[in-house]
Image 1 (cartoon, rainbow, N blue to C red):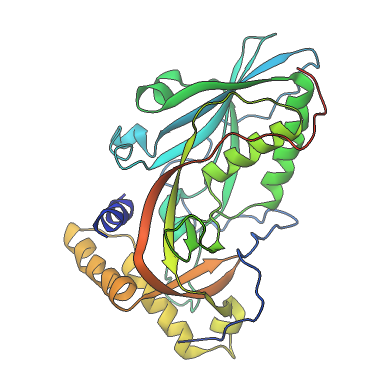
Image 2 (image 1 turned 90 degrees about the vertical axis):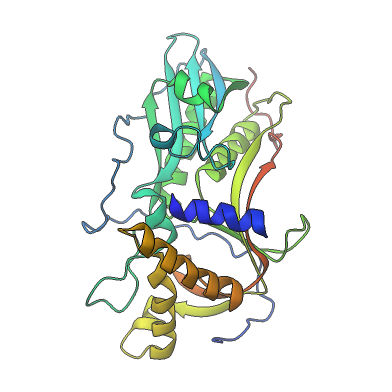
Length: 330
C-alpha cells in the first residue's frame, strides 16, 4: 500500500550492457509450457482464490449474461481509499439463464502485489528471490455489494453456452502458459503514440484478453465506456543485462549483481514508518535523481534509463472489442 501511495504522489507531482540492434518492442510476454510449483518460502498474507471452483460446462442452449466488474484494490481492507487514486481491480461476472447461478472470474497475484513487483533479498542467496506468479480464479457467486459500492457492475454482453465453453478452454490454456505477474508498463514518454518497451501482465490485461476472446467467438458488446488502471514507468531505450545465471552465477558479473541487489534493497517490506520514509528517499535518489531502474521481465534483467515524469498512474479508456470472426449466434 505504501508503495502504491508513493507512486500516486510521484504521478501527481510530477551503465551496463549494450543496446541490441533491431530489437522488437514491446518485448513479447513469454509463455511457458507448464506452471512450476511455488517455493514454500513464498507465503501470502491473504489466501489466493479461497473459494475457487472448476469452470462448469454450460448447456449449448443456455444464455450467459457477461458483466464487467471493477472495484478499488484491497477494498476489503481499505474501503474506497485506492479508488480515489484510480487504482482499480478488474474481474468478469457470468449469469446463467437456465440455472440462475452467478460466477466470478478474475486474475491476480498468488502472493500479493508487493511480491510480484519486487523481490526478496534472502541471506545466503546471491540472486534476488521472486514470488511473482499470478493466476486465474473462478468461483460461484458475484458479491454485488463489493463491486457496486465503490466500483462497477454492468452488463456488457450476452453469449451462448457454446461460446462460454469455448472461452473456458481458452482460459485454461492462458492460465497454464501465462504464469508470471508483471506490474509495470514501460514506455518512452506520456504521449499516447510513444514506444512501449514492456507491457504489463496483470488483472486488467486478463479481462481484456477474455473480452477479446469472447468477441472473436461472436460476442457483440454494448457501447459503454470502460477504463482500466496502468502503472507506467518512463524510460529511454532499455538495456538488456542478462538472466539470473549470467549475472549472479559462478562466472557472473559481480559488479552488476551488487548494483541490482543494492537497487532492490530499499523496496523491502518495512516494519516502521521511519524505515519506509528513509528508504523512500533512497528510491527517489536512485530513480529520479540518478535515473536508474532495474526491471525483471521474462526472467531476465533490464536497465531502464529513467526519464521525466518517471512514473505515472493512469486510468485510461480502452474500448470494448470487436471480433475477428463470428462463430456462434446468440
